[in-house]
Image 1 (tube, helix red, strand yellow):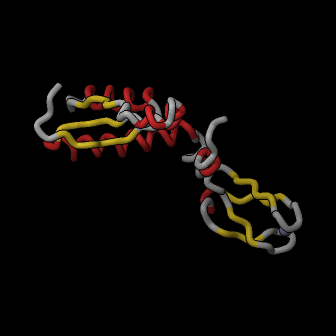
Image 2 (tube, protein in one colour; image 1 turned 30 degrees about the vertical axis):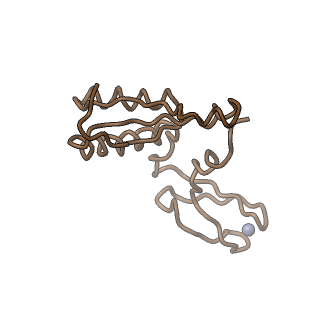
Length: 140
Ligand SMILES: [Zn+2]
């Protein structure tokens, strides 16, 4: 597949993700392909670079804006898949106080706000972002 003006659309975390993106784009009539990062870097790193291997998804410039919309949607649905409770904002959220250990329940509508502990009035962050744990912690 040849593009007139190849544009780097997306750097995927894994080959699987890159191919999911490409399949999604193809399903929406956007030509795209994966360029796996084999840029000779592995030669310097004696092969250990494989764990940093980040495949890139390329599209033609003429479709890149449309493709970017699909990428945004892809990212959204992926977050929802990984955090199925995220949209359940009507649920009650238990928050344990770091000061006194009391668990206070807040309505899901207060998610993302700061409230007071029911016992000691310390600040409590309601509905901590559950995906934060996924960042910065490499799989061992
Ligand atoms: Zn407290």
